[in-house]
Every structure is written in C-alpha cells, then in structure tokens.
Length: 92
Image 1 (cartoon, rainbow, N blue to C red):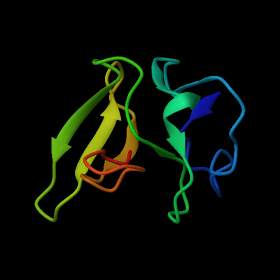
Image 2 (cartoon, rainbow, N blue to C red; image 1 turned 60 degrees about the vertical axis):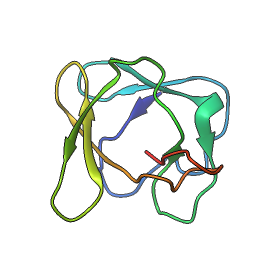
Image 3 (tube, one colour; image 1 turned 30 degrees about the vertical axis):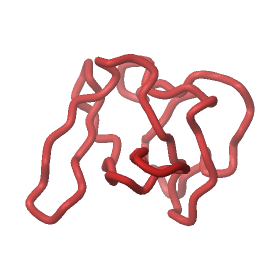
C-alpha cells in the first residue's frame, strides 16, 4: 500500500486490512497495519513505525514534529506526541 501522496483526499484513513504501508515516492516500508488505529483526524493514524529508520523527524517551532520518509525524504505529515491510542504513545 502506497502511503502519503496527498492527491485529493486520503484513501487509507478507513483502510484496516493487514499489510505494510510504504512511501509513495520510493517504496520504503513505513508502517504496519498492526500499528494503525482509528482517530478523528482526516488522515490515517499509526502509533509506531515499522523500522527504526522508516522515518526521519524534524522538530517544528509550533509543536508537532515533521515526519519524512527515512530513505527519500518524502513528506509524510507530523508526529503528535502523546496523542496515540494509549497513554504515552504518539500519533503519526
């Protein structure tokens, strides 16, 4: 499943079939469906990456952390600290 192309609506928000979400730019593995959870945001929500190097993180002045593909740098969105499905988890 290719993730994060931002082309007129997010097609994977309500997609909960088993699989691996990969970067739409280079195919790098980002998230497993096992870490996906329902959230009120308009985008799919994940509690963790599939590999330690799946994403790179870049703090922004206004709070959330910008998240990019760890291989090609494709913009994926943000990490929101402590907004995951359980206490202490983040939301990607």
